[in-house]
Length: 136
Image (cartoon, rainbow, N blue to C red; front, side, top):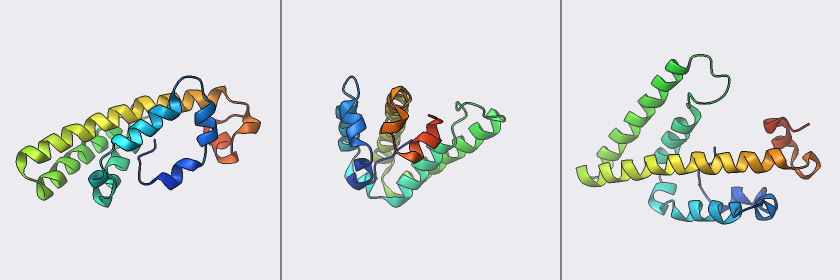
């Protein structure tokens, strides 16, 4: 899953996104722009969000889903506590809820990206993506 950090990492497959059916490129741009700069520039928030998205028990072939869910829950708790340490109570709760919604949006966006790459001709995809998505 991709979490926005800066625009430079998004140039990798913009051509693929622009040519995809539907409005995937526009959806991607909307998501990146909707991600507040104070979140994007806070390294602690970004690292915790990455951990939350990596520890997802819904992934295929996860053997110990309950253990992975427990880990993910601990990162959710860490995010909440971190926000409470840098913001007042209501602002921290509001920001936490917004970030959780962003994770849900990111999951939908990720599904769209995967679908696009799976439908592509492997010759049009970078070698790393061929390996990640097993597009041989």
